[in-house]
Length: 83
Image (cartoon, rainbow, N blue to C red; front, side, top):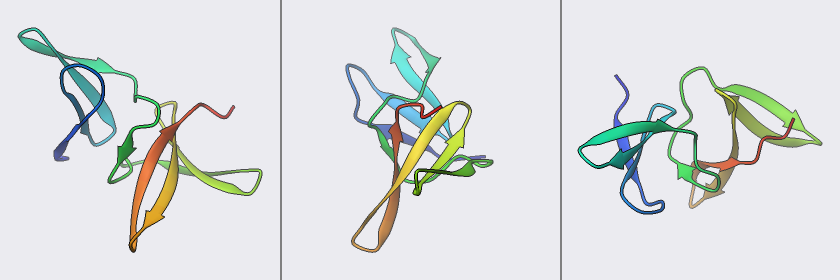
C-alpha cells in the first residue's frame, strides 16, 4: 500500500496517497481532484508518459504531472490539463 504524504495546500490538510488526494473536513476526509501547482515526490502507479510540444509530462486519472529536477532529485508538479 502506498504511503500517504501530507501536503501544504489551502486550509486544513491535504494528503497524497499514491495519486489519490484527500482533504480533511470536520471529523472525516474527502477525496479531491489533484490540486494545481502541488508538487509530489512520486508519480502514481500506472502514470503514462506524454510528450506535448517536446515537453515531458505524465498523466494519471485525468491529472497531468510535469517533472522538475533540483539537486539531483525529481519531483512532479500538477499542471493544468493539456488536452
